[in-house]
View (cartoon, one colour):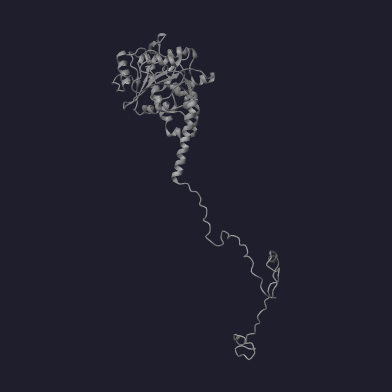
Length: 398
């Protein structure tokens, strides 16, 4: 039985014409999967079998390491070196300088010898204008060996009759534009010493130490002493030697018959021994006014000493600066309430002695022996210092 008139034959669909020269391809027979032949987890563990020459199915892509520093992508930026700018260098130097100054300040603050020199008492002068220092040079031989006493020509200890003050000065620093004043009080001045009657002013130190000396000076001057500084024989000479000596111009040959110290006239550098002889000398042809010439030389020397200590040649020279720094604490004595910055203020104010920026002189006396003060002129002088006014001309003795 046929359909569609095919003559009893089954009609097949027309085949796609093959290009000439190509082999005839046969369709692969596909079989239905057998029961139980579903995909299994073990199929991935064996290589599938196929026709010879057939490529295996593609596997997972190979693992790739991240690119190295020079394999693809931008090269890493080189590490920059830190550069010190001028500002950072300056800030570092300033910090080092501040720490250095702070260390020096702390060293001096806790190393300088202290004494209770300033004490309140009934009738003490009230504080007035300006600031007053009592500067004392002690003739104490304490701490000096026999050889050092002989080298410094301090003289016989019996001459001193105990510890006394060889130098007594009042330094007044005004609060206005008035010149600072450095005033000498002759050591042989006859004054009233509280509790001990009338005696030479330098005996007050021997009788009651710095506290009694301060009280005596306040009583005879009417000035309230705000700060106290003291230096002894050995300390004075040590400081001078520490800075390499002090440059001085001596007007006349100075030959002291008491100490045997001889200083030739002319500009020269005085060492510690000769400097001590210069400020103490009064038995010489070069010092006809005795104590008045001696205190004048003391003021002159202090001006040269302070200027030289504050000069760059001392402060910037380690061979002078560090010996000065090490010798100063043992040489100086200050009141327990004073501080290093107070001493620095005194030094700055006194730098003008050599240049005339500081008024210097001796309290007015009645005669060359310098034992009695001129009461009228002394009153004018101390009133001017109390009020920070100019000292009248002709009051001070040069």
